[in-house]
Length: 259
Image (cartoon, rainbow, N blue to C red; front, top):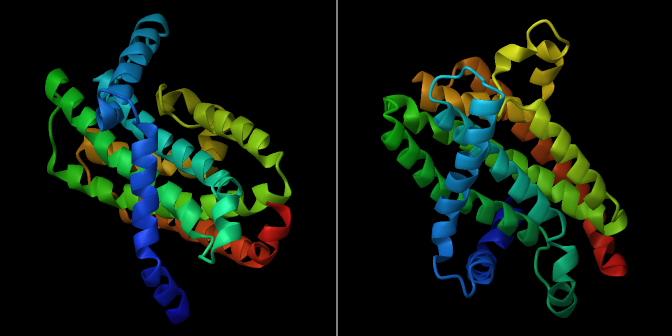
């Protein structure tokens, strides 16, 4: 553990440079630049609000805030895992030239996704102000689900980036899995429609359910994360991190043979 922390500290500047590179690459030649981290969720929220609040008529108070809060949490997960998955594979030229801890690459993608999530919170605050949603003190409690979701994404990123080296089809499978999780998580529909179905119980085995609902509880319901919700969020995060770290450590020695 001590050796691992020392190695990470030695290469911390590499992590910073990779994040800066991703920011420059993503917003290169864009007039608005990083403001798209705010505008994109706002525009998506407007489109989806029009569709689901008027056509499907979900009776949810302050639906724009409900929808955007769920979107932000799930987009963080989607972006972090998808970008982490190919991070080692697409950095093969750099890995072959110089030595560096390979976990830096999926970790950097997770950090970049977290940074985008933080900027996107500005959009959520704007929508809350415009719609007149109450601003509860519990809003600071979002740090808890965000932190544990970040740990979960790091673990998932390590696992996906390692397995993608040997099994490229995981990239296609993961798209299907994320799509399934999108509909299995109450992002744009109320959780009440689960009542009377097996999803009432099975749906709560989905880690994203807990991250979304705990985040929403702080924003909409005005309550700090309960001990139960915090424990469950932490459980999924720690388990995923342990699986991801163990898998990555076991497979990384042979990456050079397959990338």
